[in-house]
Length: 171
Image (tube, rainbow, N blue to C red):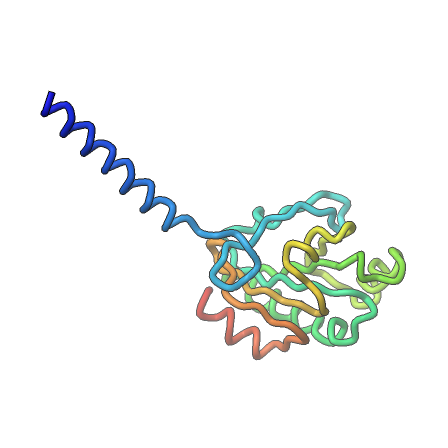
């Protein structure tokens, strides 16, 4: 009986230790650096539904924009140039049009055509990404590592050189 009690106590202690270790190592999902980027599924320019987690394994620049936003307009060529220069090293630049921030739903497609945007574009039609990522001002940009962890958050306009210095250590 004493031996059975000892085995039972040791088994419970082992289960408790394993549970504590597992919970400590589990990464929190969220929108801040150090957290696992929260997944989303949204329509894209090609008519398909895209998913953030489809790009796990690449270093990601996730940029949120609206057509009326001048800084968004100004940074778009730099984002496309980064994609072109670093795609072969595992960089993917993803953009999310914040539809709930637009004046009309026709503005985003016109902007995409005018700017000749070649990057993947998600359409946040119902504000899902705006809510999950707490987007209150545009542009907003996240740098996400290959494991899906947010490394950096930048509020405001980004430039080639600044992003380059943030992504190169991750590639």
